Length: 344
Picture (tube, rainbow, N blue to C red):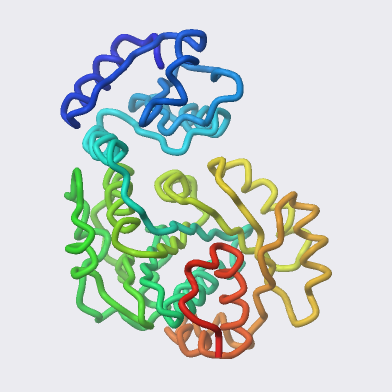
């Protein structure tokens, strides 16, 4: 749905390359009769309203140069994805090809911090580790190019396999099996990290991120994305997540920061994890209520966790019973089908 002729022409070429059929409408009244029977709904960046009582659009399509307005509009319309043309043309063609014959895919869980130092990376590692220990096929993704490299927290900087800069030239469809075979492994799960070095690395654009996460969804049962808090990581990674967890310490300032962060997130199911000492459940419930999100768990305060992240010992701490119980409870709330057995 668009009345923007240039955008219409660009999408027509992409749909033709994907071997699909495109119906173009220019307004809400004309769109309503076709909306619910379409394999995919694309909405142009000139659209400001949707037909009443219709499902959200699959993709908001815009052009490079539209800047922040695209993401704000996508959130307002409830779009599942954002395609910025021409960079995302190959990704959109692949997305449309799959929409005609959808395959079952894994869950993409995004984790971000409600404030700096909240423990989001630690939570992401422990959840990935616990899921892998239960027999789930897991990929942990480092979404923050400025985070110093997730591989350092895993003590796996020497592990053989691809890192994000190795994928900077990737375009179009990525084979899930080939991706899985090329990635390093730690703690029983695959991971894709930014290098833990001081060197300047090749940038990875949003189209490449989309292609990688699509392949990850098809190749793994659970993809845990450590999103980070920057605007660029939030846009590149959060919009490909099925669900998002915000991790925040049991503090007033953290609650305020988390409430502000929600405004930058896509319209997907979002919940709060509160980091606190044993007995913090009451505080967690109050904080979650003040933020306006459901409480999805209390992450235990583990002595030495910060130092462990610096020294690459998070996987060791993840074996503690209290940590495993926390991670298992989060996974159970996300989707009971992920669990392959009971926690010993």
